[in-house]
Image 1 (cartoon, rainbow, N blue to C red):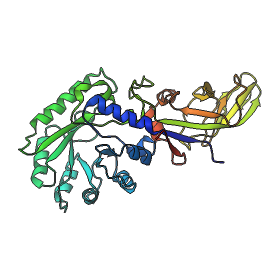
Image 2: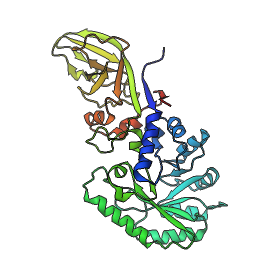
Image 3: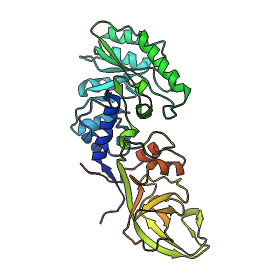
Image 4: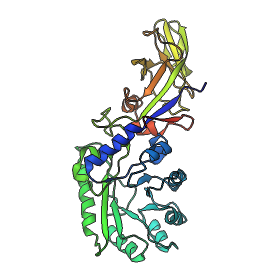
Length: 364
């Protein structure tokens, strides 16, 4: 019998969330599938969304993994190239490149490619991670256009720093910088410059940011990008992270549970051991009283998370038995809620699911 820890991946919910993003924006939407599809399994996600206009990944290794699945959807390398030889692979495998610095620009201009590539030009409007300064973007576009290495249609892209805070003044400032940079680009006849700036939070709260391309990520997996919200209307959680009770014991008042004795029983207690730990991606820093669901009822963490196990106080539910299913997070226990207990966000928890956890597609 296999270890009971697994992530059930609701393919129907994933498709529904993608359809919701398309319907809401009315434009093209590029699913973000980086970090193993936000922990849901690259194969599960990309097969389900194989009719998308394009995928977004963080590295050429992720792009090659998608191609190894036989999926030929265009793929954008969101950080561009890390070395010049990746440009040749982009030509061969139809990868799109985001050009965001002068080294990448010069490597592309010098590259011995035989056909122009689909290029996105990154402009830094305030996040200050990637992208050209807005004052440079017009000349960068001219250089790439003159090189004949860029297709006639390209995309100007930027990324919000605070779209998960809808009232933050920085959002308006970034959008203005983006619009101003776009207005200064001289696009010749028969060429087209499209735009992309809306991420999940902007798709859900900022219609003025919609352009030709949107880039849904966290919302695709059914979760709210707003830190104080558990769920968002119209979205369906995709991952149901589960395990099972594998052992039960009684302890006396004053006895402790787990490493470093961080939880001590105040009364005679019943402790259930569950087969999941930080080796699976359950957060080691989850504190005592972090909830799980057993039989649809909330039970609470008692003791430190170890590599392979957690322990739960089930004293008030003595009918719980070995083999009972345990929900770590899922449709009835949002990952955002668990993230708040752990002083992190759901992005980290989802993408932290490790390779030893089977990602099993359901509702296909």
